[in-house]
Length: 292
Image (tube, rainbow, N blue to C red; front, side, top):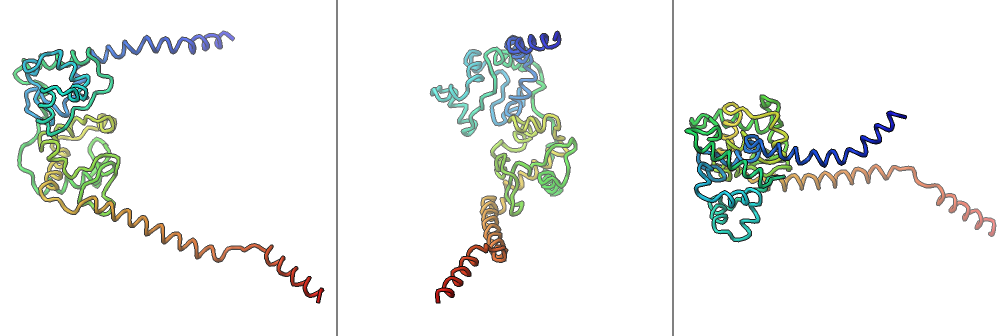
């Protein structure tokens, strides 16, 4: 009985305890701007390493006041939709790419991020200046290895999922890969080439990619570099459209369905037929015979 009473008290108190804990957890998260920047910012921005998809954030508070920056971090789309001139300028410089809203972002978290950016901007070289990767020219071996990594025939060192599980590109056959993620034939140009795409692969910004690759990160020179070579090769000389492969897949599906229906129809002809009709017919014949 005593155990049951304790369990009842705990069960009734749990919602209140959770409500008290959530602000604490949120505040703790806001006080960890380094993790916040790594998870939500560094795939599109550097601090002193040049432009990626988004602008270089070094000395950003000298270009715009902190109140505006904090509001933009919390609600980027709202600021852009308001017609703000500087926000529209940022969107144009990003070739129409709009900064996505960060889940759970608050003014406190935004201010902590701005303080981190200011501190890193004052350093000779920030830890967020961008990934260090070989800048040598891509080779045919890089392209071949990148294709194998994309298709999964070359397993990833840390056990991550193959790109083809969720993405497609042109030139990989009839089935053309997965459909969960976007089509990547133009990703090399869309994410500003070697540096931008390389940084994104090193620290993916989307929730789905983070959940897959945070525990299984890609290796810079051995995996990211070959993937960059492969995507660059596709962008320079795109093979057949993956849309054509999708159409072929649909046509094959329809053809297979039609063939299966024909087979089922042939099998159905040999089914066990009902006997009632035959019995009724025989009974009718017998009645007619007696009447004659």
